[in-house]
Length: 280
Image (cartoon, rainbow, N blue to C red; front, side, top):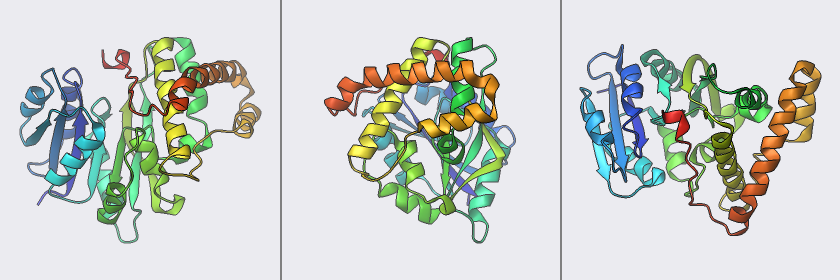
């Protein structure tokens, strides 16, 4: 039996799925991981690229839905723990092993995620400035969302599968576990590819605002996922040199909230504002 199942929902990810699978399987032993790629609603060669990797199973569906892809991947998976990985990130063999081992240990958490490693070196300054603040927010540091990877034990997997369908599946998954039930594993990291332009960053943030509104007003009432001014003041107090970055962060946040207002008012929680720039 494989020691963990890795489930990768992929919608038109032919440009990046090979990058992920190369990193994931680089040091893996034969049969160590049960890797399932769910190509959902694709009109590119995502499935073909994935089939080019030995030991990778591909499930295809015409429905372009991440939620449906996760469900199909879960049905096809053969092992626990289960590691859900977004196709546009990079995670290595050792990182998946570290997540697996933490979950399999006696008394381990129900859910775990890696540290973030943001590929920001060639991004414009406003994008770098935004993430310099965002990565310091307490909720961002402690939560499992925004990492592209969430791993769960057998019990944790049952809880995930019981969650209501929402656009922000990773935020919902993080909020489904109390702080004592989840863990950020310092020995593991996932490479996140941020937007290459300020416009694409705004698209992501509009989606994030809509996601938070759906979770707070919809099927998960009472869950708090917002950042307060006290959090920002704390960052400014600890790192005064970030004041220009905070100005960028606040501007992007206010513009994103204004642009998301129409979707939130209409309860449009299905329009996915995808950032294509990070996939080039």
